[in-house]
Each structure stands twice: as structure tokens, then as C-alpha cells.
Length: 326
Image (tube, rainbow, N blue to C red; front, top):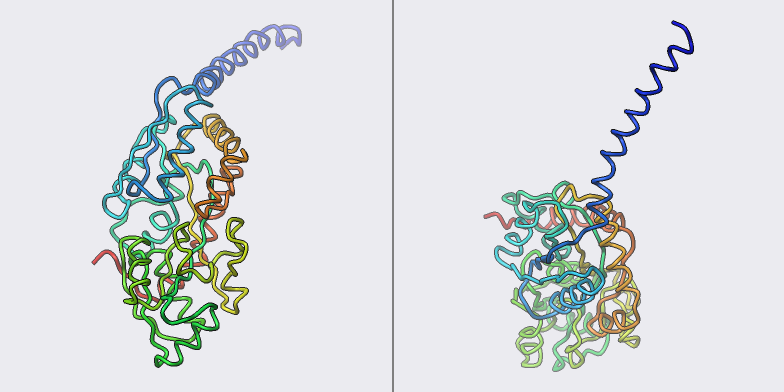
């Protein structure tokens, strides 16, 4: 075929291909640019009150201003957080239904409950690793223990058997108590509670020896250490368990997700807005006061944390033979 004729035929075809490609790309860009055009629902897979409440309402309030649409916080704690999580997994991936949850339901629960049908990696789009909170070592003031070494010495006087309260079977607090006892070489009688407040009251009343819930600002009378990988900024005088000779690190992260398949441009827009808020001094101060260390970062950081946690905790949970599906 003559070269000039070939160029004449290919020219319109190439132009048509480019036009079609541009038409296909334009709607995707427009969706991301225009989003959001209506209110966003942030489902929190826990009960109102406490740390998750503070985090969700603070982020929602800031996002409402940054995105120009209301962000409505909706608490769905049923089924050990499973109901709220499944609702988001089944929602349309359009950025209007988001999830705030933590390591317990997303990593621990699937390892302990064979009835769980969602997968943290396959069924959700990671948006932001907001932060993490260390677990605390709480002690009955009546036993006179001011340090971790004092606790171990006290255990020796009690045939190495101590009663340890935690915020529920299979929670980070439960696992933290088990690891603490293992490393300190004493036995634990583990007692589940619904929350840290009742643990504190029963420690003050002398009904318990120890407690290992997540850190909270109302623990001054009973706390002697934290289980994070570093000291809390708000409590610099509190040592970590590792500093005290117990090689245990337990912290609960909080993250924000969407359903699987969200448009990357919307994910980036959400992540950028949340990141901007997390870097504000007032956000760091508010979250630091309740024991949350701000993390943030790109969405991939959330995925990396989930993978690392699965690797770290699978053998431990398997060894404890916890089965919540019964």
C-alpha cells in the first residue's frame, strides 16, 4: 500500500482512538473532582463513648468543613463490631460510606472466629492509619507495687498466680495480659470486663490484682506502665514494659476504610484531607490527651500494618486456642 495512503487511513483512526480514550477518562476525573455531592456516613464499629467516639467525631467535624459536605457519625457496635463492618463491606464503593474500626475486628476476630465472612484486605479499601494506643498495666494500689519488678515480686508471694482483668476475650487487652504473664513467669486468672472504667473501680476496691486495658486518661491512681514501643507524650514519666524488663509490646491501632473498589482519586482526596487534620497541632494535642499516638501516612501504610499484625499475632492466637465461633 502506498505510504501516503496508509497515513491517510491511519490518521483518522488514531484520532478516533485518542478521542475515545479521552472520553473514557473524563468521567473518572470528573467524579473525583465533584465528589462529594451529598453527606458521607462514617460507620464506627463500636459503642458511643470512649476513645473511638472522640476520634470519629473529631475527624468527621474537620472533614465536613474540608470536603464541603456533612460527615455523619453512625455507631454500629453489634456482634462484636461485625455488623458495622459487614455493612461497609457491602456498601457501594462511591466514597459515601466509610468505616472506622481497629485491630480487634479487622485482624484478631477473623483469626478467632470461623464464621467471619469478611477479609480486611479483599473487602475494604484502606484510607488512613489514624493512630495507635498502647495498652496499660494497671495495679491494685493495695498490693503496694510501684514498678513492674514490684509486681513480679508480689506474684512470687502469691504462688505466681494473679487475677488479671481485660476488656474482653480475644481483645488486645486479653492478649497483652497473657503475654505479660508469660514473660514475667506467673499464671493469670483472666477476667473479662466490658470496659476499662469498671476494671479501674474493681482494682481500687481490691477485687483484682492487675488490669491490661488500652490506656485512658482516668488511670492515674492505678497505672504503672504502658505496653507501647515508646513512652506516651502525655505521660512521659510512665515507663514501657520493655524498659521494665518485660519484652511485650501491645497497642491498638485505629483506621479508616471504605468498601473494596473505591476510585483511587477519591481515596487520595480523603486521605489528604484526613492527613491535613492529623497534622494540625490541635488534633495532635486532643488525641495525645487520650493516649492516641497520631500516625497517618499514605493508604498503603494501613495495608502494611494489617499484614504485619497478622504475621505477628497468628501464632500467638493459635497457641491460645481461642475460638469465638462456638
